[in-house]
Image 1 (cartoon, helix red, strand yellow):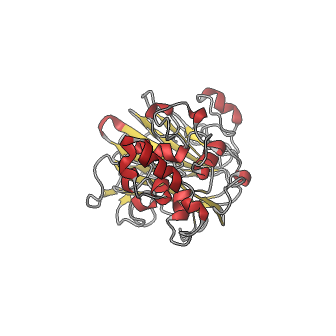
Image 2 (tube, one colour; image 1 turned 120 degrees about the vertical axis):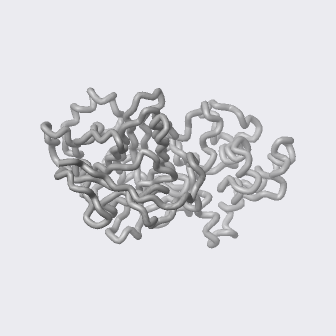
Length: 362
C-alpha cells in the first residue's frame, strides 16, 4: 500500500532560517493550526485526528526485524557500536522506518515519571500531539524537512499546561541541515540529551547528564521555583523581583563596562536585567553581554572557559548551569566567542535523524 504523509502549513511567522537560543518570548505560537503529518505502520494516511507515527511507542527490547528503537531497558552494549555516547543510556535509533522525505525525530523518556510530548514549529505540529511516554518508552515522529523555530517540550500533564523542559531546533531543507541545541536560557527543569545522525562534521551530541533527582541541587538562592531553577533573566523579568538584590547584582559591572571599555560605552544607563536578558544595548552586542555575565569585562574575547566566572560579580545562575551541565546555553549569547564551544549549538549537515532523551542519566 502506498504510504502518504500530510503537512499543513501556516503563513510565515518568522524569518527563514532564524535560529537562536531563544527565550520564551521568541518561541513559536503554542498551538499553531498546522500539523506535521506522521504515518502509521499500516501505511494509511495520517490525519489531524488520530495520527499515526514512525515506529510507534517502544519499551523493553527492540524488535530486531523492524529496525525499531531501543528503550531505556534495552541492551547497554549497543552504545559501543553507536559512537560511544557518554550518557548512561545508549542511543535508541535509528528509526524503525527510513523515510527520506521527512526528518525522523525520536523522543525517549528515561525520567522516573511519565511525560507528555508537544513538538511545534513554524511549519507544523508533531502528531500525535500530547503523546504520553512512560519511563523507558520512546516514540518516533515524522518532522518536515523544513521546520523553523521548533521546540520539543516535555510536560507533566496530559493537558500540556505544566511545562517541564524543552529543546530547540530549526531544520533547513537545503543541504538537509539540522540545527539544534539544549537551552537553559529560561530555566533548568530536566536534564536532556540530543543526538543527530548525518554526514556533516558537526553532527555531535549535546546533553546534560546529571541525574534528574539531583538536577536542581545547588540552584542559586532565591531562583528555585517548584521543580525549576529559574534563569537569572526569568527571575528578574517576572515583575515580582525588581527590588531584590539579585536583580541589581551586576549594576556596578555594567557601569564599569560602559566607563572603561569604549566599545561598551553605549551600555551606560543599562541595568542588571538588561545584562541577564541580553537586551537593549546588550541585545546588539553578544561580546559585551557575554563578558558582563561571565565576569570577563577586562578580557571579553577570551575563549578559555576556565577563566569564566572567576571574578565576581557575575551571573551565578550561568555559572551553576555550566558547573552542572557543561556546554549548555545559560543566557542568550552564551555562544560567544563561537570557538569557545560553550553553548551546545550544533548544525548537522545532510542530517537524517534527531534523538531527544529526557533524563538520560535517570
